[in-house]
Length: 441
Image 1: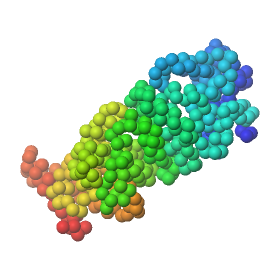
Image 2: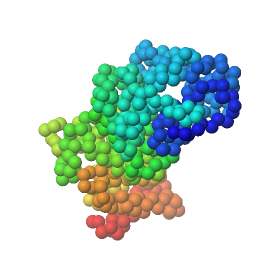
Image 3: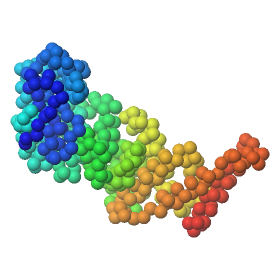
Image 4: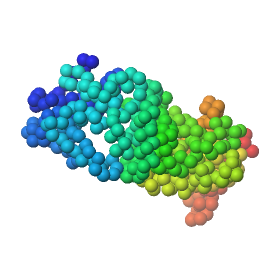
């Protein structure tokens, strides 16, 4: 590898600097690298400050380059001294070697460094694991940081199309972490941050938008389920695996498998959607109520829509989910079957649902709602290419009803409640006309 590192100032010429971590990994995978992290070996805090670097790290010495503002960290070792991902004592001094620094990292593919002349330092065989497409922990210290369970699952999702899998021994350690209670030490914000990144990020960290078929957040959740982390972090979602659905509408049978298929359809439908995280979160939440169905009633899940609402509220509060994500998830959870059955519903029922969805004031949210519902319909074995005319039908009905406004009724001399009643009737008539156009009785 002959890639050179270019610096914007001569100040760094006195330092022993290496490009490290994800940037080296992605260079070796021939991926575009945007964010670069640098490691400085054999230097002191005082030396970095004299060269004009600004110290920003609180728990360990991290500095910003005086001109390009990229991050430079002193080589360090870490020792576990408490619970959670912050319970570490850091030692950063000139005698810490690059091998010692790389040893504390999570995966072998992230534990490589590149010198200024392009030489790869790879003491833990990361290049071989890259070649074999294996995500493998560097050392047994992996188990000391519960956040690594989420990070490895996210890496597996990001590099799924490249054929990467998690080493069996690493998955075993992830399961051990999940079962020892350490995941409970992660903050809600940190868990949501990892989930949000899995739901929305492109297939290469730091890059722009990738094509939808390179995004696989369902792999992230499948792995969390496999290593029992999902049971600890989101049991209401985890329990869906093994809960059956009617084969007529769900040839895939399993509610957990169905939810993952819905999530992947949501990815395909939201490549350029600014609210893609919310839509994909709604896809995850839409069938949570099925986990509450007593087994003697399987595979029927009567009333699962409203039964799921408290579960959406619970996880949203637990993870401090953004309000738009929560509100959309609640509406999809409650009304996705209404969307599927749109052609069977009376005009008056459609108007009532439109009012509940507040389509008059939140047209963008209604569009996102329809995408999530469409994802639910397509996210079934053999349904992936089926038409979903309900989407356009409901859009046309809302568009026709939205043209009704209060101005015309005010000009007629109506006031107060009379205006509201007149608008409701006019909207109902508009919906009926759309139904007739679609030849729906």
